[in-house]
Amino acid sequence: MAPTELQQYSLAQVAEHNKPNDVWMVIHDKVYDVTKFLAEHPGGEEVLIEFAGKEATADFDDVGHSTDAKEQMKQFLVGEILEAERKKKVTTGLTINKRAALIAGSAMAIGAGLALIFKAGSKK
Ligand code: HEM
Image (cartoon, rainbow, N blue to C red; front, side, top):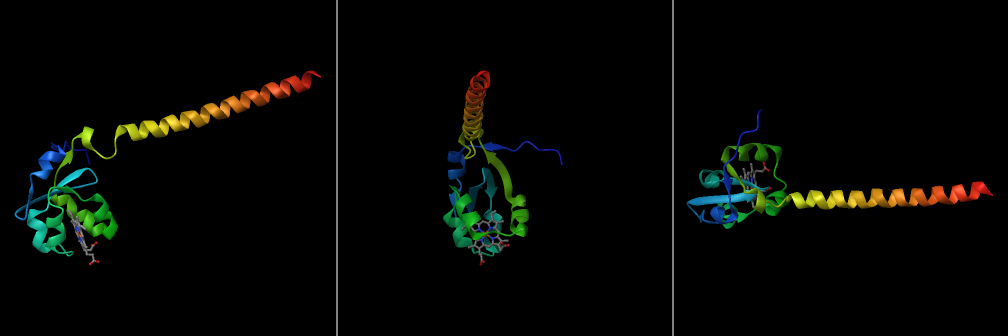
């Protein structure tokens, strides 16, 4: 399936949909309008209303929602959070890359050091 462009929303825009008759929430950087799902939610409408306009990722994951639930939530998807406000920031990737570079760099330095020692040893 070709990736479709999702409407981008800021967290502040999502926060405006925080009424019992207008419930949006953020789960894994995606924006869901669950207003029409409230009465059908097996976990009850209260929890959904509680997260109206908010970030619900951790709580959604904690419940251990089934694959069916994850499949079902796609029909309520209305957009995604602006890249700058997403949890998975690009900087996280950079941090990991930096760490990898540091480890690789250290390994090379140790290797070069060992090579010098061996070289010095073999001259004797
Ligand atoms: C688009 C969002 C959501 C969808 C489509 C959804 C769907 C479902 C479904 C299908 C179930 C039945 C069990 C399962 O299949 O896993 C369920 C149960 C439940 N959900 Fe959600 N859910 C959503 C968001 C949330 C959020 C934000 C919370 C907040 C804590 C929540 C709390 C619960 C609870 C407490 C149960 C009951 C678990 C149980 O009785 O074992 N859900 N949900």
